[in-house]
Length: 396
Image (tube, rainbow, N blue to C red; front, side, top):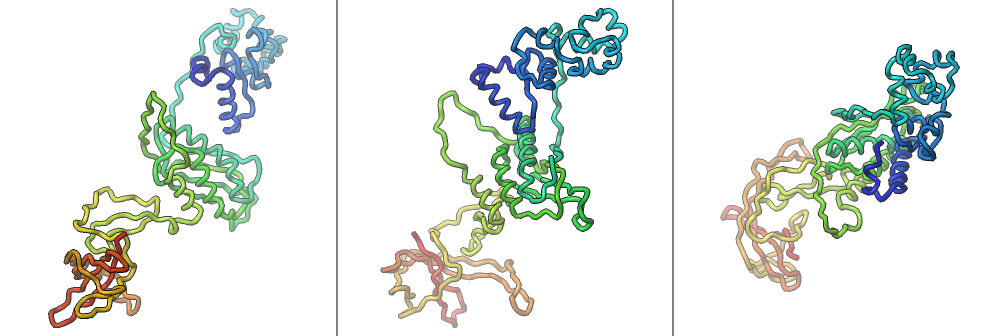
């Protein structure tokens, strides 16, 4: 990593070192070193030397064995017969003889390590899809125990998403069973986690995966993990202002609801969705959090709508042709005629037949002296039949 041009941006050398060390530890990196050149830093890291700036670069590298640089170690057998043990011994050999006897990469690597020639590396090309594998340090017998390795894979996926300016809406964690498993256990298992919105938030994905794995039982000890981003979409990043903005406190509602859904199940956390229907009972339906929402906008029904409706309309008593509910009701507004639903059919609980949910009603806004404003309707029946009154909703 070339960090020199980023020191001021990240608050100085010490703070930037801390950030790099924390991120490297999260990815499982065990050796870290700093030096003026990348090959020098790699050589120091392989030998456990953290500070390559402790002295002049030549004095830091000269005592190191030549095995710490790959291009030099490729000719290790020949160099050992020549009496070379360290990088300083290799540098003392005549350059003309080295260029004739060995390939050009040996001198190039030495010069780049000592800062005598510029270093150049090809650009990293990100794959079109993300799939990373991790071998666990030991056999894991419980599903929650997989989170140690899954965390590293999630951090890798977060970096891949950030570089591609994308967010994940579904990812799959697959675990491979140990080779000593029983035949009935199978090769492994997997779990797919979905989010309501595209996200790059590794901490949120980690919590969701933890909640889902808590309900999984492994059929055999696991030895390897594979994490794949199965559904990825472009993410719209917020444009930040140069002026300080008011910071939001707490956690976003969608993130909290997703964690509750992962813990309680999809059928326990539902959201209302409006539908194109004039019948009060079917103006909205409940669907899971992560279900796809309709793209068309629902037209607003004209006229007053109650704040709360009863699951089953309550039949009202009638006195002198006036409906009663905690006393006589005064009709304020209406009638609003609602008719339709002949296409809506459901199965009968007995007999296996079907019945239509067609309704023909006249709705009114009525006033009760004790209950306040009510939403009532009268069924439309043939003239020779008496229509009944029902209470269907209440106004706040």
